[in-house]
View 1 (cartoon, rainbow, N blue to C red):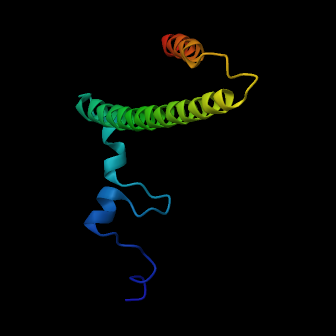
View 2 (view 1 turned 180 degrees about the vertical axis):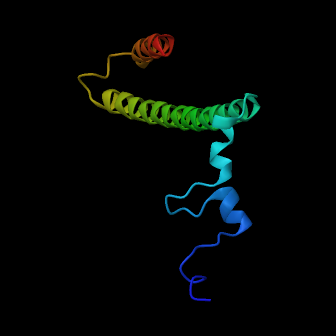
Length: 113
C-alpha cells in the first residue's frame, strides 16, 4: 500500500491526450508514426481555413474603414465648397469645377487600389 501513492497511474484520457505537464499523450505521436498523410493534410486544411477566415475578416474591416473614410472626405469636401461659396472673394469659383477635380482624384485613387 505504501508504493501506490508514489507512482502515478494515468487515466485512459491522460494516456491519450497527455496531462499538460510536459507529458504528451499518444495523440501527439500519431503524425510522426503514421505513414498515411491524411491526418497531416486534415490539420493543414484546418489551419488554412482558419487563416482564410481571418483574412476575410480583415478585408471586410478594411473595406468598411475605407467606406467610412470616403464618406468623411465627401462631407468635408461639401463643407469646404459651402465655405468657398460663402466667401465673397472665392464666390466666383464654380462648384462644378471643384467637384470635377475631386471626382477625377477619387477615380485615380480607386484605380490605384
